[in-house]
Length: 202
Image (cartoon, rainbow, N blue to C red; front, side, top):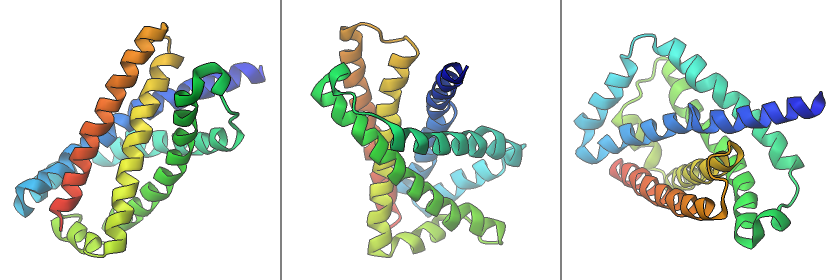
């Protein structure tokens, strides 16, 4: 019974990391990338997202609750995981370890980002270009955001590889090699989007 629960929790954790949390990450990066078009471009995109119908419901049940489960269970996995070198080899063992490390870094970053933006918005602050410009004008915060964003993107891209394996989509060694290159490409592409967005605010 405990084994079945563990299996179910790991599958759910993996699924939520891609859908909806991973998709939200991609959407968030795309919206932020509007900053490269200037202040008005970003503010219009942010206002559009703020104006979505049922926004509170969507944020709660499509973002925050799935993210909370993924984060809490992810911490459990990170601190109880055993080395898997014998199963996947040297490169995948490093990816396995970096997945756990990036998960912890991402959790710290996301918690701080939510505090600086969503929580402040609840107290009346406006989430706009100027808010992000003020945050990122501090060099320490700029590099904190760079590390946090790249960590989150790596965690998503590498987690996508694991998702494809654990859900039986990439079973053969060849398909796993192909998915490795695909997820590396996703990591690079999204990292460029994320870093460009951050630099646009300064």
